[in-house]
Image (tube, rainbow over all chains, first blue to last red; front, side, top):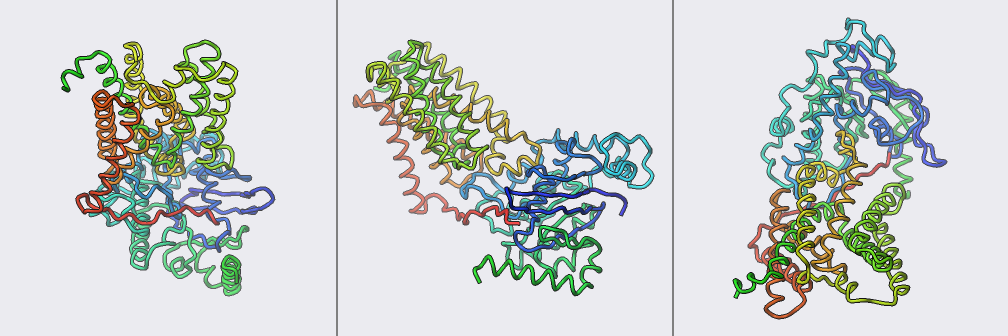
Length: 288
Length: 284
């Protein structure tokens, strides 16, 4: 772990009188595969939306060492795969068309990368300025050199390459509406990969996928993590979190745990509390 | 027979204007249908009715007042949709009835319906002047130019606005630009099929084209072809049978839709399997 990619401090989000996210703080380190667990309605998606500038919030979020004033340039460097995407079922776009949309604003991506390169490396900024938005001229001594690490997924620069990474090149000319939910999620991962993201946010990506699609997804996620992409991933699947995550955050509006997965899974009391809380939410939602 | 029809100046103007309008209606209609905004044309055309009534009431050229009122109506509709919890179709309904109500009030003040007003309600493509033709073709060229330049951006926000925002697109600005383009398209097209039938030319060729199960460019191509064919045939047949061109244009478009559905059920067009639409659930 060489530096902080994302820092969330005292994040609070409310809808009227309802507090959806209550004063949570966590960070994501370079190369992390952070698994966020929490029952339905625990604020995972809301937190992601705040990070991506889609949701007003209270508190402080910094990304690659910069504050929200630079997010317009930095968010295009983040790959985001929402839980599910609604679209017109007859939408006349092929898989290739959808993946190509990922680099629709190449200028923004270049601008974001230029911003990070300004001081050799964003990681250096974070470690020296602790998330401040002022420029830091000190040379990079800790994190990897951004000049050599401008793109974390080398080779994923064309729609076909991105589709190959997610094992869907054979479906490139099919319409998006013809694909299964699991295949669609992989298309959206490819759409993120085409811009070689520095960080990916995956919001319960396998919720509506079958077992085969889930297995494929996890193998892709593992491959991406090994290639150096920082991944923040929310899931209900504790087995998958235990198997693939490097660190874990557990939340139910408030943050109950944030740290190494070994620590999380060895804390039986915490696990029991999480399981009971998730079960209660499930039963409440299903009228039991 | 066809050469004889084409030799008339009014038919030449009608065909040139009709083709221009058919192209912009189906092109912009693709995005409207994809955004589940099919009745936007209907809503804006009713607002345009209010604008025309205002023009007739004030004694100014009604098309200009319709342009201004329709663009304002379109922007208001977008604002209503984005800053309140009112859904797209409900927002269209609110704007539609408001425009119509204003129009009815102004007409009653001005002394009732006139020939001018009827020509806007039902179309009068065979009566347009050379100046109208030049204006329609120029505006259509501008709209097609903007759509060609920004088609990928409009396609992305039609697919998913939030993903487009994350990709760095200025979705708010694009949305406002889009409704302005759509409002201008509707007003430009009123002379062809009239206020009451304009949404048919925007929606039907696109629904038909989507049944072919092709990608975006081919779908737009098929839609434009269908729209132009309906328009040209409608205008020609209106001369032959002395019938209203607007009604014929729409009925030919409907016939093409029914024909395509028939071909699909007979297996002459590949029957694409479309899965149930998925939904974003921000439940956490």
